[in-house]
Length: 146
Length: 387
Picture (cartoon, each protein chain N blue to C red):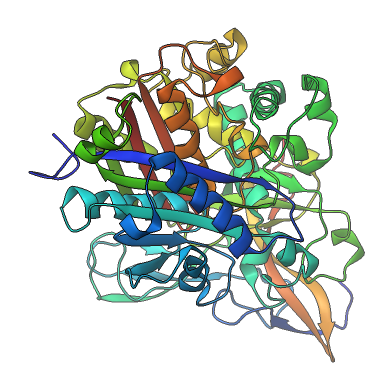
């Protein structure tokens, strides 16, 4: 991180937070059912488990556990970043609250291992004027990979 | 049990196909006319005899269903268009079978078609620069099935390559297949083909393509009259299910599954048919990627949990093996244009049960499963039985 952080905006609104402080990890914007307690990502109105409409917004993560992964050998769509031109990691990540999400992963094929701890981060994929357009991805927790 | 309580027994009266492949000079109407007229001829029927049509397409524009049907004539029949992703053709058959079983119609035509070549020419057609889900390709989704399986069961990329090589081989025996290799495909070639999403290579994945397929369904009594010397192919099970919620459900991305859908749908089908996995002689599945076929061996109950790898090594699912899978090449070699794919499975299974499958013929084939997954997702399954 350089001293003067550029302003950031999410690729799509309503899915993850973009904290003012670049050192602070993002959270996923989901839903909790106030009747049965089940959590969901992305947001929804009706509980998929008990069908209750008594639901509320809930912040999820930023921790996660890698359930499965792959490395895609195609450029990441919509990205102008050199790192993404030859491919990118993708994972199914279990959030501590329950939901499983599919998201890009930071790193190479050999960096990933089923069951490893991860943390969410924002990845700038291109520029839009004076702002960086960011997506949410998960990265191995520093020192957490075996 | 039967498909409908107090319903009529339903048969596949005829089948027809336009070979799957890359056909930039053929329109959806051209391919559909070939497949549809072939199916009518196979049934021994004229389009005048058709009471209703169920038309499946994924990529064709609005109105294409009813417009393509004009190729056969304008008789005023009801025409309905359906889309259920990869399971579109199978979903059309499900509706047609229900309508004949209920007595609403006697003869229903089920037509599936699609052209993917145009979509590839304009590769941005289906992606949105602002769509979060575009990072998750179908290949990546299924690759993660493979990674998880490798973690849990010690599966090797070689197992996936063996499935793909088998399906390429079967495609070589099918004149309607998109991929028809003229010599055996070695496992090493599958493994060394271009990596799409680790551990899945291009040769373990289905191609894009164009094509059409058609099935004519009607009551069993009519099948007996139309072709007295020919074995009757009965539809003894027909089921379609969407997902049930379980913890860990994936709500975003090109999701197919979870595996429980195949377990649940096949349980309904086995009960309708009064059959179990041990009675099944051949199976067509949604093998868009080789890992899927591996999982379906177990999810359909054809082998026990955790046994798939040993069965693959033994050759259980090859032609001449215990229960051949993807006898026509499957999605990997026969092809997967979209709308017609599920009906190509019906074409193959019908020929197999009649003993007309040539070099692909499964000896003494009596019961065949046709299983499709449609992204989103749905599972559609039929069991055909030689009557």
